[in-house]
Image 1 (cartoon, rainbow, N blue to C red):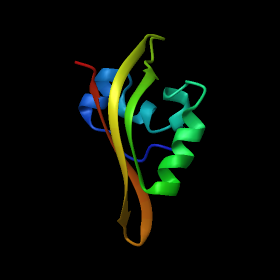
Image 2 (image 1 turned 180 degrees about the vertical axis):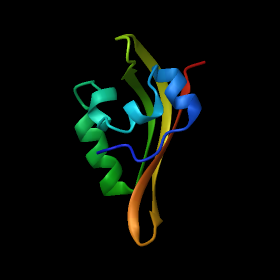
Image 3 (image 1 turned 90 degrees about the vertical axis):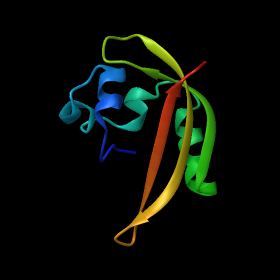
Length: 87
């Protein structure tokens, strides 16, 4: 449940420097009660999409849409997520 990569947009959106964000766990940013269960559901099915809330470094909460899916790199599973603001 650790971040291994983050683009500049994710860092700016959440208010973290890249090295700070890469030290965090998914549940440090996705702090809502069902976050761990959603992560486990994504692993079980290989994908997850819907709405989520994330906590920014300054404590503000953002409501976002997301799509996450499994991919394999060098034989290891990774999970890639795309998040965007609610319209």
